[in-house]
Length: 240
Image (cartoon, rainbow, N blue to C red):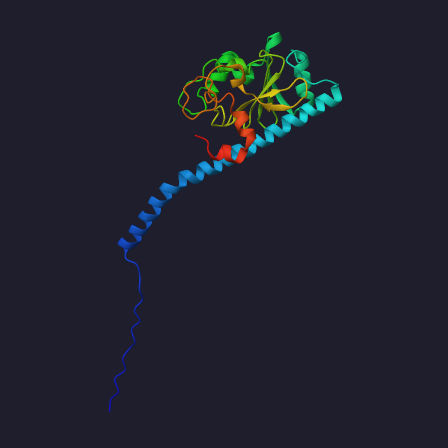
């Protein structure tokens, strides 16, 4: 008697090419929907970290100036060469770009167009990205220093007794926007405290004009340091 031997056949389940393509398409759509939000979250967190570090570096330097020099820097005491010497002494400066009171400038920092042209080539838009900045340079033009880590420090002494200190927290990197990486602080000449500069205190305009997601004012964002210092995490999480 012959015994028939039959080979066993194993059947394995597999995806068809169409099913694979459909799955990849779905993944692509989901990624396209979620990736921008993830990237924004990362960028905003980086801006928050840079803001906190910049504020800390400036505050500590000012405290050292007050202790070692015996005076709190003011709009009047920091003039010309003296401001450059102090900044170089208490900050890690790689380039001194402009000292407006004596006309000194370094063309390698800002090119042949001068400070105003250079400034607006970087900071052309306001906080909500919709409005062209207007006369913004006049709040940052009495001293400009690039630090070794790329941060840019600005001084302004033309708005009262309190020295104004501006900072681009990540230097020449984007986004170069008021309220994102460009901030203006006020150094109280009596206490030495570095606080947010509230332009609204000097203006009769609506209180939401200078750090607003909707304002079309050419200085919108000038007072955002006030809001950022209140709650940095919430502020940067909700950038427009």
